[in-house]
Image (cartoon, rainbow, N blue to C red; front, side, top):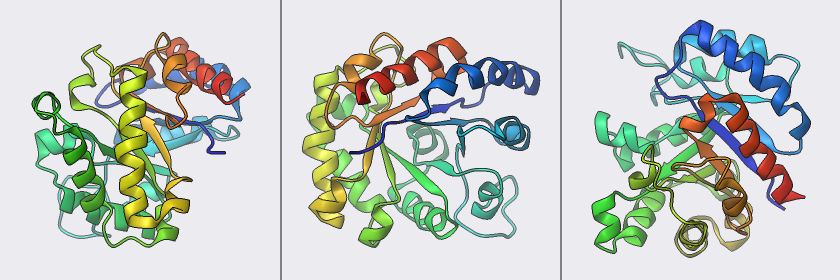
Length: 255
């Protein structure tokens, strides 16, 4: 059985003091749900502070991005080894990175390989825009992003991945995909694309999160679906009670 995994992507939010206050609320709220894998992904400046606050808990931490090179003249970038000093996870290929910073399937592929070689667990984001969705291109876009973004990986590397299906039209809009729509993409596009790359057995073990306006209200319905293995949570992860309620929904769905 695939263990549910809920990660909170804080994006470019919170001061250091606000992050500290959020974690002071969040850590005890998440403690009862240790059978759900949980992680927070704060901005880069707070990784050390958050890491210290999470010591002694089994709550993981992820970075929101990284470069694929180990070191070099890349001003403003952060290397996989730098991330791995503090984090277990790294979000790669988020639609905001693709849209605003020109990331492509090729650069995502390079980052995934570097993350895996450094011992990080990549959370690889895929998803279609509203125009692509309305044009009936969801399957085409998501298939391409997976097969190009993960090409040349070995099956044993595939087992170390987490995929996050995040329809771009649902991120931060309050317009989440229905549980049935998300389940259909997970089961009929994402998992078959993974099977195409790694084989059916490996594909059946890779966790697929849903992301895009996940809330405590819609989480139970999403997590009831057989191929939705957790969530990559944006705005709701900035509120301790809301994020804890989403994790609780994952725990109850697993039970």
